[in-house]
Image (cartoon, helix red, strand yellow):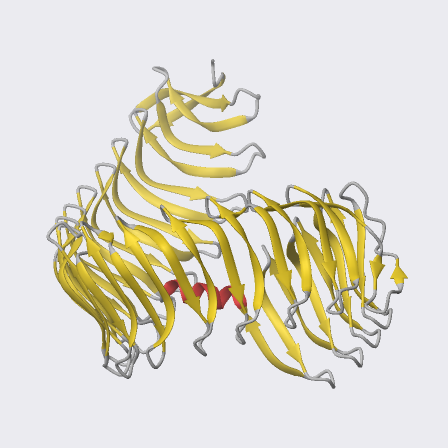
Length: 508
């Protein structure tokens, strides 16, 4: 496809040596918008000043050509006319200092270019003007010492490079107080040699050896008070081996697991503080096998059932902290499959229904603690299609909404016949407005669901009608800024959940 056409306008230019004929030229894009304007000699070679434009006719590049090759300084602009880059050319090849800018002509990048590749010093900056990183390139490859910085200006890391690969010492620092977080070595881009990780207070957190990017030999983890947290062992290929043991700060065993050929093998132990049992089970060739027990912290069994090839299989039972049966039913391939029973704390039936591949299916019945039917639900592979009327524990029959074929509203009540909660359903899942109420009738919460997950703005209320807290959900998790109030309406706390998650990920 022909991407440009030339409109030639003739003019005579007078040079110091005589007359030289030049042509004013305009290049067009395929859609007839102007692409560039400048001078062209009789041999159709670009000479002198040229400007390039976007589809709106705004200049986006400007510089000089000599014999069809870019020469000297060139400037690049954004759509608002702000300079976003300045660079140098020599005979059509990038050479010299390159600078990039944020809006407002704030320096973003500064470095040296040689033969179209980075060569020499290189620096990048944050919008606030603080240095982000600095180092050197040689023929497009990182070499020597490179430093990175947090946006506050404190050091983030110092690393040595050779031919664009980490080679030598690497140190990372905590963002606020600047203490070391990690010390380690690299060899040809691979982790190699001693590794040390520290808490912010300077105490060692984790230590061991690397070889060819693999952990090898004995590794140790520590609590912040300096007490031993864990002992691990790896073979020369980086595979876990032997018995690994983890401890609470006061020395009690938290967890113990053994490995053969890199896979868990044999007894698995997990404890609450005080060496109180939490989990007991067995591994075979890396997979859970046999009967596994989970316990409450008071020593009562929470659940037990069988694993076959790492998947829950057959009948499983779940108990409360008093040892009362809460639920029982079969698993197949690690998901609920078949008829399940759920019980109230006094042992009476709470719910009964079927799962198919982990999804509710068919008729489900829910009962009050006094055996009275509360509501019947009709499910289709995890989607609630319709319900019967709602019945209080005293036998009062109330409307459960207008849910039909998976669409409509669902309502539930307190025994005093006051509305307890109401949901909007679409295609068998919660989708739309949802509200809950206090037993005395006041609004307790309001918000929206999207495909069974809380989304957008939610508000929670005190009984006096004042907001207790408000904020947004994203994918069923609190997101962004949440504000918390007392009963008088005064702000008592604020939490930025996005920032908290970011910090958790950064220091995980």
